[in-house]
Length: 142
Image 1 (cartoon, rainbow, N blue to C red):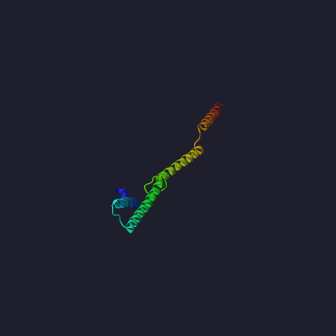
Image 2 (cartoon, rainbow, N blue to C red):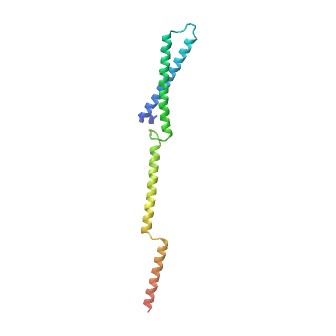
């Protein structure tokens, strides 16, 4: 419930849905009244019937429009477009973090290759040092 209080759009959306439910209830009452009048032996006047039919059409159009709006909203939610309560932002941040991490690993690899000697290079340096030491020993012995 706290999330509903913090998110005015969600609260408005819920109020709209409740309003649509009330309109559907009115629509059903209107159709019930029409059917009851038709079942009576003495039928209502033409103007009264037209008024009831107009009310019925108006309610049907309102309900249809509101349901279409809700369906459009839900289709946006399902395809992952940005909206309140969506995970779009989190997924985008996660993707950016992955790209950043990958970039850092590549840069670290470049630095390591540039400034840290490889095993082959270390072995070569050790061999060169050993050769120098041997040469120095032979020079000292002579």
